[in-house]
Length: 419
Image (cartoon, rainbow, N blue to C red; front, side, top):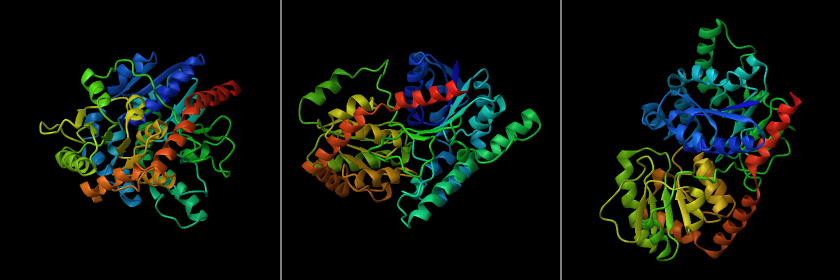
């Protein structure tokens, strides 16, 4: 049986689905992952089938629309940024449809809701697989509203609003594509997310029970499985220089902002971090990522520059991790059992920053707009207290005992057995 997984975005939007695909492959399924061409080598390296979605994600993230989205720091700006994404995702719909030909089930990221309509067209199960809690609940607000607290009714309503925002970004491109291909709109062409709550149409969330426990008011077939971690890195090995740096002194502090692509601010960010390390007297590893920071020849021996490294390998060797608060990076930091300092830039990053602080395993988040060397140095000192370090170790051990990808694969297998 063939299971096709649809996802589009940065590495954090891809790696969890590779992890899920590997567990499905272990269970005997043929797994096809449709995503940007950047990830072809990685996906095929794990023995999974790859279907290319046109475009280079590193170039896409340089577009004005994506840059606006990466700076959206409130729900209204998120809505505006999603509106600008419409023109970027139209051409992708055809690729996603063709990727699903011959499939027995479709697993889709919430950013690819055409997966639901393709599954309905072929009369096969669809599984909404989300890297963040999305199913409506009264327990807490939707992540883009997470810093607003107005009670249980408000909490529930924010999730419904967020569903509509996500649907709003893709509705027109799906409608246009479907009309072009079939001469009409998909059957029951409405927000698909609230339909993913039955045995044949489940929702599975890649999040730990120890971070956001499954709410009592979720429907039966909405699951919180634990994170989907991809631990293997087939073609990556640490350099001897990196190993020497790690072993020559106390654990350093990690700094990385993932897929944040802001060359104009890279030099300032690097200078700010270097100053914070001087103030705090700590060593540091700086991951430049997609131009989030810059390389400098004037750095001391107490600072080591890398482009990137597998978080599963690097983070457990750190004293603390400083990052933007992407869902995947946050999860890796939590499992590593080290304190986190989150510098949110946009969207759900503010929620992950606040949640880490609420759990007592990191500093109060510092929005990028308000970041300076003094505040960062103070946060580093704060998270290295025994209380926060012990709390981080405890939740790390708990998360490490979860096997979210395996649990999610079993749910999908059960869905297919009923079909």
